[in-house]
Length: 257
Image (cartoon, rainbow, N blue to C red; front, side):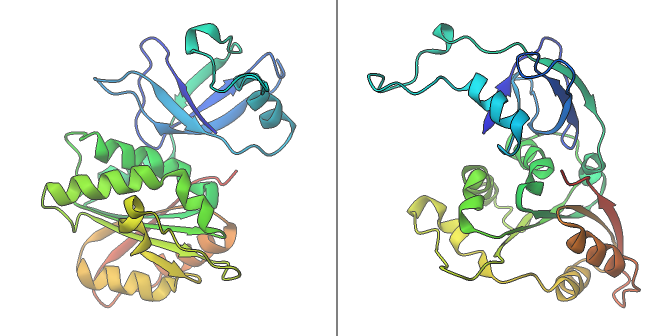
């Protein structure tokens, strides 16, 4: 579920997170959510994505969405709907803020761990100025192909923008489906840029880092990971290994929750 909010004078940067409190669910529970959309000069709304797992998110989603009615074909207008009161604290800093502080960055996401990097992609799509980043490698691993649809429109829009600006090498995308049973494809025409970058199985991390090292000799590469512990441990170990290309990989990790 995607939630967009508006708060006066709210400012945030990609990689930061907020803490939500909804008294309609529980006055004593506070939940952190990574921002997937930051406010800009043209659009002041900011957003999060939440996965409905557990009592709090289930109840929170019920308050956000109107109950289904047999005689209602479309959702009521925004002005006619009553939304729950929400308290927003933050934003607070996270490791992914430093993605733009490297010439080259590698972002690795596992499943819903993609949320810290969605804000980074939105910033590139919105044309944020004054960033150092010259090349972004983005690897997203999911068990099922349906998960990629969460941000399929965003990925395709960024791909199209960079091609129109004659910068196709700026954004290097790889999508991995780890579960090979009943494999499906992204057959929709509008998702063609994604289907051509869809791979089956798990990434060969050592080979991947070696390829990045050869293409970026004697440079510092920021490695940012949000996903299962197994992926984080492997990347952390490989980043600490010596590189014959002279490339230095600096590991950063987001909390996975």
